[in-house]
Length: 242
Ligand SMILES: C[S@@+](CC[C@H](N)C(=O)[O-])C[C@H]1O[C@@H](n2cnc3c(N)ncnc32)[C@H](O)[C@@H]1O
Image (cartoon, rainbow, N blue to C red):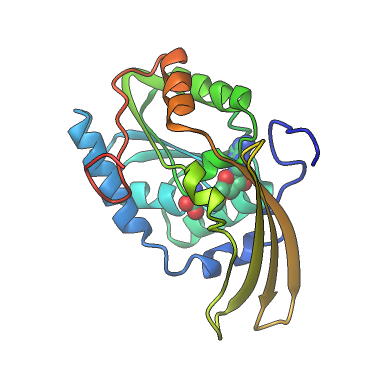
């Protein structure tokens, strides 16, 4: 297996971007944003109309636009041009205001004005080295106000070990898919070969995604090193530790 690079060798979302929202049609983004908002409130920084929210790895902007609906002032950041194109199109269609910026999590710089930063749907696992993860946390810390809050999720070592990405779509899905994942315990990397078929057009798409698993200790240490204090982890959708 090739030595780990910081990030994906090519944009694994480029070809699927126009179909990403169809693929995610059942993802409860509104419930996610309600849950994140509750976590922010518990951290003493409630999300309010006018709050400045940075949605990292925004993709097609679904999370960003949920915050925009709640009256927040939102910036969505992602390195995939095709995903951002969908995000901007969606914002225009829904007449919602959000700014979308193309940048790498491990390399961006924004002024320290955000109340909240979020990075959802295992996007941090796409950073393939601990050094890149630390750079991303450092960049996020700098973009937040001193008492700003970061909420993110990750796929755990256990989840990637269990090959959670080896899965197929339900029969009759508008975008059918078959994914096969191979976890490499030494590097804690999953290489996921994804194949899609868009039913309406018959278009076939394939992509290789790479995700790296980080231990709880690595993540906590990276957060502390980059200036985050009061780190708490939660089981998904719950208010208790995993
Ligand atoms: C699984 S998608 C999640 C998108 C969105 N957060 C959502 O919930 O639908 C992962 C996103 O992370 C972005 N991404 C991966 N690595 C990145 C990096 N190093 N810098 C910026 N964006 C990145 C991809 O382009 C993709 O849009």
